[in-house]
Length: 348
Image 1 (tube, one colour):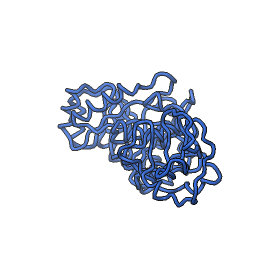
Image 2: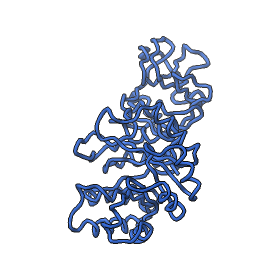
Image 3: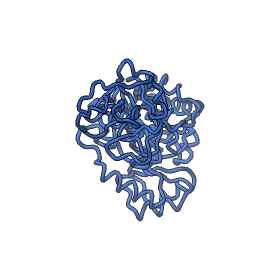
C-alpha cells in the first residue's frame, strides 16, 4: 500500500492544497479527510465536504473519511454505508461512538480504518476477520514532545500487523504547517522538523508501515518528487553539498554495498567509476564527521576512488579526501539507506 504518499485534506485549506494534489491526480494515492473537525463546521459544511470528496474521487484519489456517530446525522443519511456511497469515499476511519460489533459489520461492506492507539489485539483480530481490508491508523501529534517514540511505534505496528491489519501513519509536511501550533503533524516525535521524504523512507524501511500520509496541508514540489522517485524507482534522493570538482556525482545512482558497516555507506560502484577524473591526489584530508562524503585518494592504492558516506564520526586519514557533506536535516535519509539499497546524491 505504501507505493505512494497519502495526503491529508482539510476543508478550510483545500483551495490552497489543490495545486499540490493535482500533481498526484490519477495516481490512486490515498487521502485522509476528517468529517468531524469542529472548527471547520459552518452552515454550508456538508455541501463543501461533498464537493471536496467528489473532486478527490474524480481526480483518482482513494479517500479515507474520518467519521464519528454524529457524522451520519449531520449529513442526513440513514447509515455510514449510504454516506460513503454518496461522498464516493473509499474507506471509513471509525472514530468514537461505535461498538466492536458495529465496526465489524461495517468492515464486511467497506474498507475500515481503526484507531491504532485504542485497538486491542483481540478486537483487531475480530474486526480484521470480518472484512477483506481492515487497517489501523496511528494518530498525528500537533504538540511538540507528544509524538510516539520509535520503540513503541515499532512494537505496536508489528502487533497490529500480526493481528491481520494494514497499518498507517503520518509524517510532517514542509510547507503550510497546520495550526494552531504550526509545528508539523508527525506520528513519530523524532520526525518533527525533518524532511518529509526522509520521514517517508524511515516509515517504510525501518517501521514497515503499509501506508504513509503527510499530516500537514503543505508539501513542496521538491519533496513530493523525491518521494515519488523512491516509490517508483526505489531510489532514495539524498541532498548533499559536494565540492565543485565533484559535482559530476550528482544524479548518479549508486548501491550501498551489502557488507557496509553501520557507520558507513560504501558506494558499490564507485571504484569502477574511478574514471571520474584520473589521478586522485590527497586533498582536504580532514576529520570525517558524521555526514561527510569522502573519496579514497591515490595513497590508498587499489581502494583509490572509493566513495563513502559517513553515518558516524571517523578521524582524519591522509588517504581519504572529504569531498562534501550531507546537511544535518538530511541525515535521516542517509540513515535510511539500507544495505543493498539504491540512492543518489542530489543538490539540496
